[in-house]
Amino acid sequence: MESLTPLHSPYLTLAQAQDLIGFDNLLVGRLPKVLINIMSPILTMRNQRKVTIDRWAKDLSRHLLLFTHRQWAYRNSTAHYKPSEGKTVAEHTMVNEQVRSLLQLPSNITTTTTPLSPHRRKSYYSTPRHNVSKAVLDC
Image (cartoon, rainbow, N blue to C red):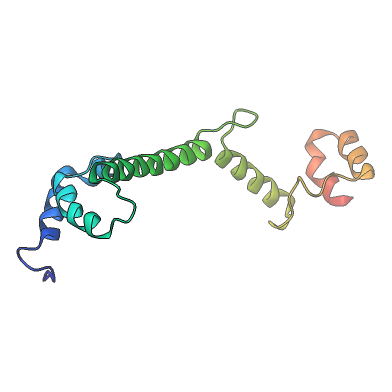
């Protein structure tokens, strides 16, 4: 593959420096010094609020770290959160899908918006447990 970047471009140097550090380190806020050197004149030229290069680098690191933390927190909330019965959200979803397939319910019906009506509730609780799915379907 041919590179379109000029041979002595500062961006090529930046890319090589970032490759040495690694992408994971970038996401936790570790920036290559070359980035600071490249951004310093750009920031000076465009800076209306007089933000220093140090302040800019600290803010960039902070934003990268917060972004990574939000991704980590979201993943933990979906993969490890146990809302009830000791099951994760993914496990609850899987159980709901299994119940829907056993009851042959369309996937757009949610159990929270369509509770059992009084006559179905009475039938459900008075039916022996091995016939529960048949009793719910017959009502």
